[in-house]
Length: 383
Image (cartoon, rainbow, N blue to C red):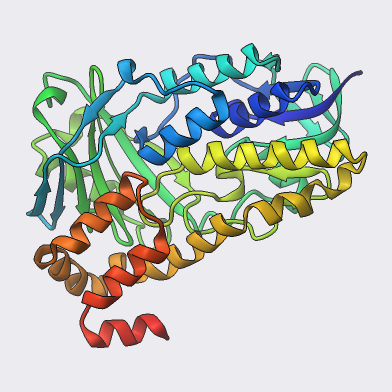
C-alpha cells in the first residue's frame, strides 16, 4: 500500500486547489479522480473577480483569460421583460470547465501532487482508499473534493445530500449558428425556474444556456427549460438536456470528521443565490489543505476538522445570510417586490452585479436590499 500524507479525492477546482496548496508545503499528496483530464463538466463556468483573486493566491500566478470569453456588460430579465442592461461592469470571464479544470489539475501536478486520476474508488475508510482494481492508498488526512455525489460524504454520513432539498439544473450548449456568442451579452433571467433563474453565458465556440432552481418546487423543470429556450429563439426539440444536482444553500455545518474533510460541492459550498461554486471550491480546498498541513505539523491529524471549521466561519456566515436573502429574491410571493425594486434602484442593480462579480459580500448586499424593499417584505425578512 502506497502511503501519502494527504489524499485528495476529486481533481476539480476544490481538489486541485487542495492538492496544489498541500504539495507546495512539501507533503506527500495523492490526487485521485475517476476521470482522466481533460474531461467535460456541466457548469455555467462563470469565473469572477473573487475566483481570479483566489486563483492567484492558491496557484501563484495570474489567471490567463485567453481561453475564455470576457464580458463587461450584463442583462437582467424577468418573465420575458428586460429589467436592466449594465455596461462597463467589472469583467466576467466565461470558461469551459473542460479547459479550466485541466489547467488547475496541471498546476497541482506541477506543484508535486502525484497523479492518480483515471481510477475509480470502491471504498473508503478513515485512513485509506481502495480502488476497484484492489489497489489501496493510505493517508493521514483525506480531503473529499468529489462533488455533489461525493463518495467521501457517503462514507461519513451515509449519503451525500438529500436531493429533495438541494437544487437541480439543466443545460445545453447552443452552437454559434443557433446563437452567436460574439453578439450576445451575459444574461440572467429571474423566475425562469421556481426559486431559481435562467442563464445564457457566451463561451468560446458555444453558448451555455440553462435553468436551475431548488428541486422540490420544480417538478416540471424540463418544461421550464423548454420555455426558456423558446424565449431565446432556440428549438428545445433539437437539444438533449443535460442535468446535474446543485447543492446550493444546503452546506454542511460540519464538513467532515476528524481527519476527513469535505470541500467545494461535496460540502455544499455553493452560492445559494447565484449558484456560483468555483470560487468557494478553490478557497475551501486551500483552507482544507492548510488545516491538514497544520494538523500534520503538530502530529495530530484528527484535529484537522476543528481547524478547518474555524477557517470556514466567514464563508459559512455569508452563506447563512444568502439563504435568508434568497427568500426575497426568489420566493414567488415576494419576487414582484424584489424585481420592482431591482428595476427602480440603480444601487440594488449594481450591488447584485457586484455580487455576481465577486466584489461584494452578502452582509453588505443584504443591507442595501433591505433598505429599499417595501416595509412588509422587510418585516417578513426579519422574522
